[in-house]
Length: 132
Image (cartoon, rainbow, N blue to C red; front, side):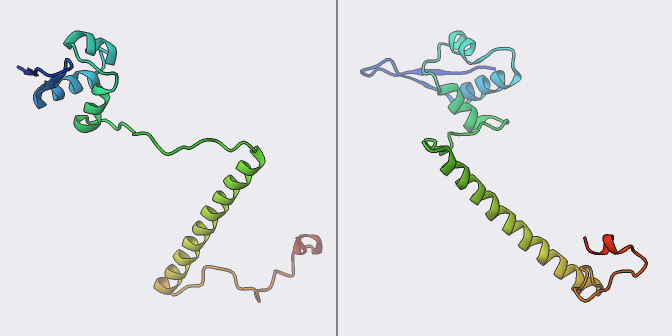
């Protein structure tokens, strides 16, 4: 496979690489025998992130970008409260989804899935079990 490195004359030593060259480097990187630094040395590629940028664009694997993590809170209790509030919100959404699922299943199947509040317990159970 042939590739082309296009050299341009400008103030810096900037190189423009062809699409075929970029795809070849990404394919070689994803196969795994060489790491990023070795590929940069082999092909004379400059820049610390250039190969990873190509991988995000041409690669077949998942390359996550930078997320908005932000700075951690100074007070660990406030961070814990924030995390718990997030978990509570997720649990509420999950509960709503389950309730809707049960309602739809009851309508489509014509059966009662949830136990009604007025349902009685079996009288044969011992009293200490019924009260729990």
